[in-house]
Amino acid sequence: MELAVVLAVVAFVGVVLLVVLYLSVRVVQQYEKMIVFRLGKTNDGMVRDPGLRFLVPVIDRPVKVDVRERFIEVPSQTTITKDNAPINVDFLIYWRIVDPLKSVVNVENFAGALQGVATTTLRAVIGDISLDEVLSKRDQINELLRVKLDEQTERWGGKVTTVEIREIIPPRDVQDAMNRQLTAERTRRAVVTESEGNRQAAINNAEGQKQSEILKAEGERQAAILRAEGFSQALTRIYGAAAGIDEKTMALQYLEALKALGNSPSTKFVIPTEFTRLLEPIVGYVGRGMAAGPSRGAGGESGAGDGGPTER
Image (cartoon, rainbow, N blue to C red; front, side):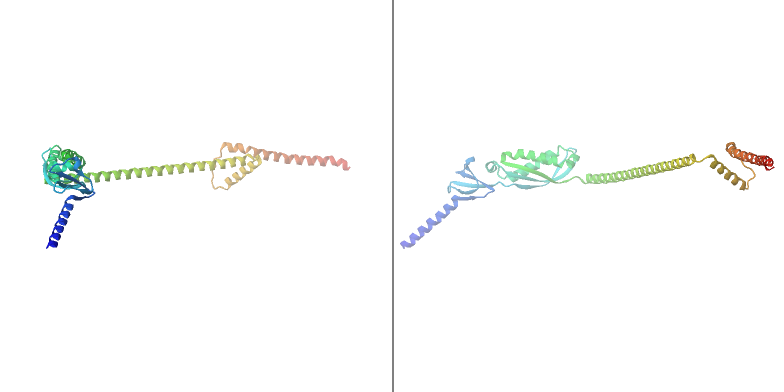
């Protein structure tokens, strides 16, 4: 009987020790912070870092806070722009806890409070912007929302890192107008592109024709220069050959010309005055030849008369 009582006491003490050990030992993960409430109170010194932490059983109450970056999805909200155009906007908010103590003490549900503030802030921001600016300046709106939400959540120990608008849905009539505008813009760009292509093609054709004309003119110039050089060389050679011709050779050439004229069937000839002047040497040669013939005959007779008496 006594042994059973001892075993029961030992078992009870063991259970109590296990319960105390369970209540006094906590493991804080790397991505967590632990806030310890001692008799319902806490302060900055009661914030525990990651690792194995010990508590006073029954007196201390731990609250773990996840400090990783998280996000919440704000469902589509209908807002009115500055020019009274209703649009539907939904976006994402990325946030994290930078002060675990404030996130536990100052707000009950940080994510829920952030979503509520984001909804009202979105309506305030969009209400100060026209529809065209909402559709074209999404990045500026994201940054403006982030700054305003960060200011609101600072007292709760949170930090809004990024705000991303996922979709903006304008009214149906605005969508139709935007589609027509987009179609007109694409048509205009196509016409401009086509006209630019035609203009460039015309410029290229004109440039090619210009180059062709330049090359053609350059070729004709070179050909003319070569022909002139050929004529110059031919005249130089002719002049050199003519410089060595004497009067007798020229006379023979004139006789050949007269012979050709005599063989011609023509009955009328136009002879330049200069040609008759060039025939004067020929006439002179003929006259001297005829004069030389009688002189030789008279000389023979004189020789015969003088020889008679000699023979006698």
